[in-house]
Image (cartoon, rainbow, N blue to C red):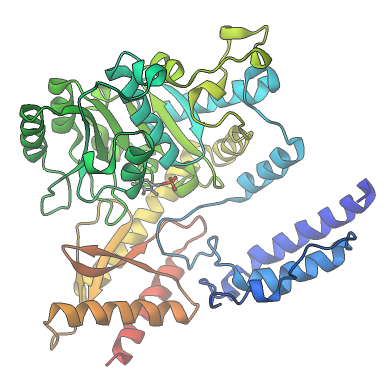
Length: 472
Ligand SMILES: *Cc1c(COP(=O)(O)O)cnc(C)c1O
């Protein structure tokens, strides 16, 4: 492709994107295709001769788009969002255009220094201790894995990195029974073992019970285990339950464990001073992760990972083969040493565009609005005789289920709510996902999409009650 042709299609694509966003609500939010529908329409082999861009774009519209779920639709209320925003999208154009590999300072000084600065901005914006350091990771899963590996190295005087596992006592990682699956995955990869992830019981709010945590640690020590790390969730994935950080942090201090905080989704709420209570005790923690790519309007992937002691992080991941030695050496940050991959995209740019374009106030305004919309939805559920709330709402996630008065059997209620979810999603008008709360199938209404307004939440509620009324 020639540059002039590139220019023609670039304009065409920008026009397409604009129309896509203008009419995004016309698409079925959840793709209605069945397994195999898309691949059936793709050729067995790649083309031997190059094809015209016109044909590729036509196939994108006709063969690919129908198989896409529209995560940027304001009618998307499922899982947690993977928010984009127009400023973020513009930055992604530029990042792709520069196509830089930002593994070290020298390979693109601005990428490193911008990342350093926007991470400092975030530290101030969400109220983390000002002497912490931050780095962008691809996902929270990777950040949590990095935390476990650092905890392992700190506990062993950096010897597992050198010698592998040999004579160490068995490590244990503690989290609540509601904690995210990435903790088990991280424990598997870090050599700790899934069996050594201990799930601590939860209270009525689905938050970890600190007393149970301490009892478990004491019992583990008496059996010869080494308490390595505690993961506190500031917003679990199922219900956004908030583990009580301060008592957990004091236990971590007493037993000298690593304390990692997984605030992947709800961490964004910390831009609001009225939510800072969630991280009371943060000074006692070692690491913290939240995803601007979930609720802070920045395209996937952008996970902000913060650590108290960057020396431990760098010492754990540092590599310095001859071909990576540079004159700037250790006078600068080389982010390849701050995590697992060597290669890194220029991800700070989109965060910078978002933070500048929205401003702190713009972000706060939208986050507050999302929470208010969730409060409105919660009130509708609370006032409806055939629906009930299933968990306390901490930020903008409402957990609820359909419970028409004649039905009391739990299995029947579980089936009914799965049927309700499937029927709602099949309309294509809105998209909801579910979880289990105390073994009960529970629907989740996550009001966090960048463009969501009151009318979308009202429409969703009306859809839900109307469809529920048609079920047997
Ligand atoms: C979404 C989520 C994760 C995983 O996030 P990735 O960035 O996709 O790895 C981890 N923990 C919690 C609490 C989450 O909500």
